[in-house]
Image (cartoon, rainbow, N blue to C red; front, side, top):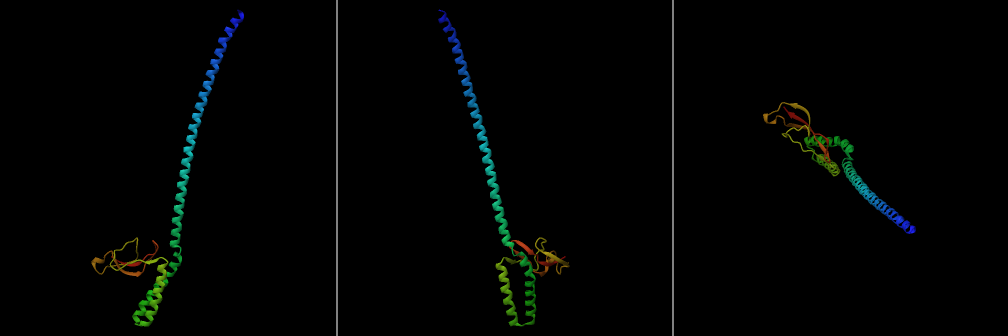
Length: 186
């Protein structure tokens, strides 16, 4: 009987130990699950952060490409700015020469110089140079014109308007490379 009692005593202890082990296994599984959930949450957060970083970097690169393309186009448009600026006095000399030859009434010389002048102007136009149209009687605009002097207006309706154009203005692309020099009525 003592053997039987001993077995009974040991049996409940074994069952208790097994229950404790089962509970500890359940807790371990639960902690593994929660650590897996934490890992998954952490992984999702890292993935979202990396996606955000990638999108920002991609957008930055696209902006950089657009900006460099625009700068390159602007550079091509105004690459000849120095050359064009240096040739403007030659254009002015052609205009003066044509005016003087017209006064001298030498038609053959006038036609020859005019032909050279037109060829020169057409070449510059093909390279992007355009003439600013300024006429006597236009309203003076300080953003578009350079006032050399002010004189009293011959008529009241010419006050604040252009009375004379001394030197022609030019643009290269969208940029003004020389403002027209004008006389303004006061």
